[in-house]
Amino acid sequence: MNLRGRIACCGNVSQYDVEKPAPGPMAVPGLVVTKRLRMEGFIVMDFYDRRAEAETRLAQWVAEGKIKAIVDIVDGLDKAPEALIGLFGGKNRGKMAVRV
Image 1 (cartoon, rainbow, N blue to C red):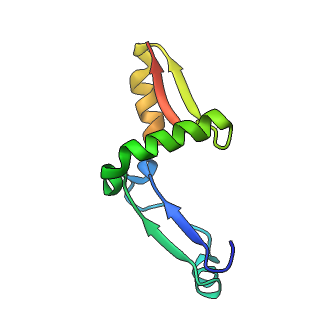
Image 2 (tube, rainbow, N blue to C red):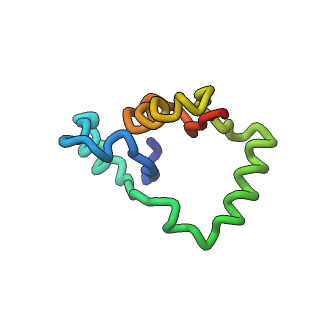
């Protein structure tokens, strides 16, 4: 992390239904203090009024190769329950999709 760096935390679906969240690295509190970091959670609805702008920019960045959209695809509607369980279990790396 850079000095005064920021960490954006978005999404944590694999932890929604667990009794006790998975522990993070033990050094994080010290790192946050010494590097004067800011960590802030957000959800997409916090910025819903800027959705069109985000979609335009993100599509452009994907087209330019600046970012890569990762999609985990499961084939077959019969596999949808398995895909959902995998989503809540943190088995996906990107967007989870079921190809019908």
